Length: 307
Ligand code: GYE
Image (cartoon, rainbow, N blue to C red):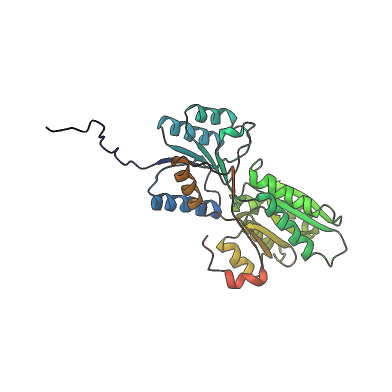
């Protein structure tokens, strides 16, 4: 007689993992490279990406996250524009049973169970590297050195930590003085504007510019040239990211040093998503390795940059 195997089940149709990603904006070359990397890596991994761009608005990020909950995505990733204010919405995500990954920047929450892992750079270390460069570069100078700082987005992880790392390193060098520090939202336009106002107020008292990203530094270079000073000579410039455009300026001697910050986080993110879905546990913190570049290396490196 025919025996029917009662235990046999049709294999479940293979459906791709769905990832909802709330990108904070498109304010810089770094950000655009980050977005590209995530799109490409999702494609390569066969992960279905639902992508929302928040134009640097936290409330738009909240909307995106709520829509991901409604869509019942498998995993949510966010690059939080600022650190504060996330706890309530992350609780909603947790209640919905959706695992959450922080990418690039961190949200400051008192309950660490609200996210699985945080993937991104060590911004504090980047700030320290920038400070060390300034100390070395100015080591022969005994007079007071006026520094201005272009801060990125106020309250964002990279700005908080790049500012702190820098200060912690220069604090014992009493002739290095931060004259002024103002946010310019990581954009070219605001970098140019704020640098212009610095120059109007302080002129050639400014000996060093520390910019929290390349886009603001590029804007500042225009402001410095329009003011009639030489970027990289009259004003030493140190910036963070390592974009192609910054390397071009460094090869021309208009930027003196760039601390690398790697935006190509797509592969890391997709790997984390896959592992999560397979039920593996992830480290709470995944840090990307990075270097520092100076003028002497710029020529050899320019053009080889992937962002
Ligand atoms: O340095 C800047 C971007 O969060 C690390 O954001 C990122 C920063 C990056 O706008 O260019």
